[in-house]
Amino acid sequence: MTLILEAVLLLGLIGITVAIIFGKDLMTSVVIYCAFSFITMFLYIVMGAPDVAFTEAVIGVISTVFFIIILRSINRKTK
Amino acid sequence: MLIVVITVPFIAFDVLPVIGDPESAPNTHVSDYYIEHAIDECNSPNMVTAVIVDYRAFDTMFETTVMFLAGIAVVLILANRPRKRIPSAGSYKRSMTVAGRAIYNTVNKDVMISAIEPVILVYAIYVLFHGEVSLGGGFQAGALIGMTYLLDTMAVRREKPLFRLNKFQSGAIAGLGPFIYAVTGIVSIIGGGLYLEYNKLPLDIHQAELHSIGITAVEVGVTIGVAGTIITILNALIERISFDDDND
Image (cartoon, rainbow over all chains, first blue to last red; front, side):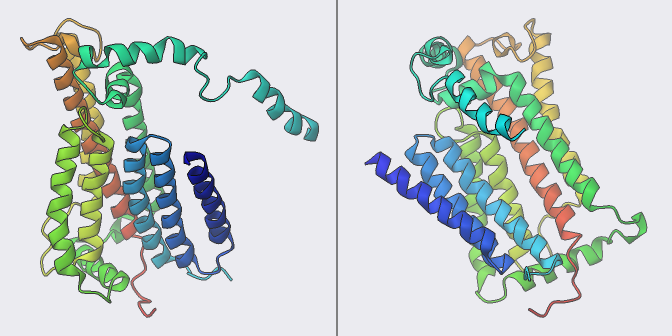
């Protein structure tokens, strides 16, 4: 059961990473990156490290906000 | 070159121990010691905290210092303008408000976030002082405090800001964290022990209690360092936003 859950989460991570890389809108990429850290959090919980999961949850939010602030000062579209 | 790049990982996989191998060296000696002695020696049911800030306290001290230096480096890289053009207090406040309005202008979030902020802060304090009993510790508490400041700065529109720091003040606070950590070590030297040897702190109580106090003091340092670093980076980033094009 744990194995299946881990496999699903890891496959989700791969999909999300591809979506981040090929996204045309940087704002979309940032929001999807937030989802990346969310799934990573679940992965840590499944692996039995709730401390790290907690840190990941908080830092995921903070880094997302930092990215959004940065997006205000640069051009949002990649092409 | 290509052959080396391809073959070295495979050779390395053979040499390295298997992940999670119960017979490997760390799992046979060090882990058992931690599991058996963490509660007796440190009065700390959360073994992760015991290992991080007690058995490997020196390591964590320099991690905190590295994080502080990273925050300072961000400020130094981003704030490369001439000194005259650093915004004064008035324009600073205005820029905060403009940034907040630009990012969130759809939902009625002022009331919502104002109500959430005290809860987050109380939770941060709980996480800090229960770090050795339950989940969390200094780093998480500091991140929560920094996140509260960040939410308040970016999302809440106020007539008069409740509590704002400029980047010099927040940098000083970030430096205060490692300083508290180092002073805890020096106090234990004064008590006659080695650096960061908590059971030699000059207080007349049981040894495990001393460890508990030492862990808490160190974690307060880590919390202040992390929160200060996050606020410093936020201040450095906010100065960079261009407020002229507000039309998307």
